[in-house]
View (cartoon, rainbow over the protein chains, first blue to last red):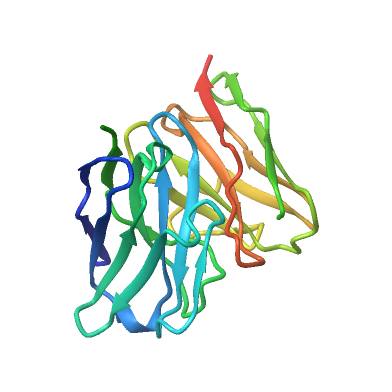
Length: 121
Length: 107
């Protein structure tokens, strides 16, 4: 059974940093691309960043480019999102999502339960 | 950047009704489109990918069609458990954009 478990969310001040983690199980992690998708309170879904199965290819939404870094440790079956220079508009539930193949350009067949990031002073 | 526009933003229909949701891309995306259902307080779930392929386990009352710039999600006979917000998502290029969502309620 595919399981994705996010952690690392919390309250952070504007300009601060946070690192999210997503522990994956139930599938061969290195064979699949992964993404982060966020949802601000009461709003729609926004794709944030994606990474190929090997980790060699990454993509970012314009809204986070230069501030967020996606990475993965295939030996630990874990996906990360390093978030720097956080803004109030980054406040959202952050979901870890699995892609059905190795390449980033795809839809999402499994989602984690999400972790809430709140940026506020 | 390619924009994804859904319509309507919300709708109310009776149980058993046929419901159609539209998603329009600002440029052609071939058939690189997925549809998701997000029930209140729940995680999104993929219904359709490649514009018209039903994900395993999804009821057959859901169907998708379209190619290029215009796509539709159809619920053939609306059920109470279909109350949710539905999103389209393109995946033909690096920005994996979602539509704004369509909230479906029971009349």
